[in-house]
Amino acid sequence: MHGDFSRVLFDPARRFSAVLSQQGRVQLDAEINEQTAILLHYVRTLATDLLGPAAYIPDPDGDALGGFGVDGFDGDTFSVAPGRMYVDGILCECDRTDYWDQPDAHLDPEEEDDQLPSGPFLVYLRVWERLITAVEAPWIREVALGPGGPDTTARTRVVWQVCRLPLERDSFPPDMHSAAGFLRERIRADFEPRALLAARTQRPDEAPEADGASSSVGYRGPENQLYRVEVHRGGTADRATFKWSRENGSVVLPVRGISGVEVELETLGRDDKLGVDVGDVVELVDDAKACRGASDRPDTDCGRLYRVCSVDYAGYRVELDADPADDPCQSRTGRRRGLHPFLRRWDQGSGDGNDAYEGGQSGVPVEEGRWLTLEDGVQIRFSPGRDWPRVYRRGDYWLVPARVLTGDVEWPRDREGEPLRRRPHGVAYHYAPLAYVDPHDGDFRLVDLRVPLRQRR
Image (cartoon, rainbow, N blue to C red; front, side):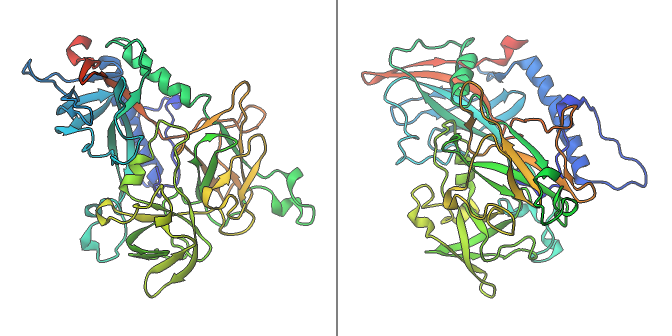
């Protein structure tokens, strides 16, 4: 999540059950957040063990559909019944809605990928968590702290999206008991083998001779940082790109309006460190783009990145190197204030010693099998697959804490001290089948694939 965190500590493999405060000690954001993560992990694991990977709460009225029941298919849409469902222990709550009006999908009737198939398809629930700050939810900010006052906490929001998976015309429909495995295997096939990354700092044998090993190795940044390496464009290594931030992608500037290449902002940032300047790389985001970023297609386009060409400090305006309206992937991004548009700053292309804007609008190309330097001695390495090319999923990310005191990054190592390869730290998606729909000759067949809670007791 793109929060202003010092680091993220929770790891279920450590088997910690609580974080305990001690008198007279400093309290850190990472430790408080770890306690929250421990509790959530316990509660959701317990719910999954008791209820199964997905279970809905039946309505007391036996004639009602119950939570997330699919009904009323007419070829263009279908209704979704209100109620509750647990997906991998995560509580999802629904008021009555339909396919096009669901709250966090932001579907576009003109997009072919959003339209319902003419042949059989599987309706399923995709669940994930999104970070919400005062930029996306202004009521979080305490107005008593004054205009432009200090930011405080952030929130996580459970996002559920009703999606469809087209099937072959002669495919054998799954039933309630086999649907979960059927869906998992279909989605997993598009994203396996997953991308792997390792991180370290520059070694003495790689330091330029002119600089001297003592001054050129290790982490050389002036401050502690939490580096975020995020997949920008998905696919295999020959197509995938990435972007990175030294602030975990937390530098965001709310947008007031867009006119051509000019973007009017509410602020240019609290200071030089947490703002934007000429030459910075930025991304235009709003609620719709953030939610549509959760895609089950590895080749889905992601929109371009922009370079800041000039800054009007008095007018809170920046000029980009291209008009966002010219990008078909985000021609409407940032145009509606109700979707809380903002610019997010990324740090490739700003500063010295990095791949300055390499890849341009598409991000930095993924290169497997060699160490890539971000900045100040921080290096990453994408690992190639053995038998099959690895698949990079758009939005997947890794977090790399860098510390001045040790001159190193915090990354797990093997017994020889070599950095281990790690799967992405997020985003974690969870799935639950809802229904099988087969339109045929103006009629349709609908098979309910949900597992009711009472069958788990």
